[in-house]
Amino acid sequence: MNEKGLTLVEVLGSVVLLGIAVLGITLLLQQGVSSSQSNVQSEQSVQMARTVMENVRSKLASPDREIELYGQSLSLDSLRKPSSTAQTLYYPDADDQQYEISIRSLASSELQHENIVVGDRIYPLQSHFRFIQVSAARLTGTNPPFTLEASIPYTLTDTE
Image (spheres, rainbow, N blue to C red):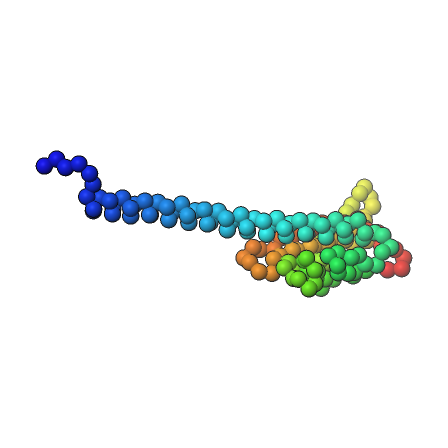
């Protein structure tokens, strides 16, 4: 018997295969969107850390005692001295805390080299540079914090 058309079993089998294919594609798209959101949050952390580091770099050697970032005060005096205690800022502001930004000045014992030698002269790095560490992390989410470290030129004055 040569019948034209499809049986019910063939149609149901085709629908099941099509459903599995659509489900697989949907899961891939969902994972792509989730990964994209994670990348946006990571990029936001990087941008905030860079902004804070740039502001500290531009003002550390100035006579200013503090700077204002994201509507909050950051003490430059405490960054001019090594400290294990971090200062904390929040983004976008202290009332709407979505990201936490920690800033600290590391002690010379935490640096790889404490002195630099030029010819026969020895320069203690701690008197000419501050090693600043800025970490930014989203308060909700699974992204690890982004940490930026830099040696910022700074010369101690006689009053410090």
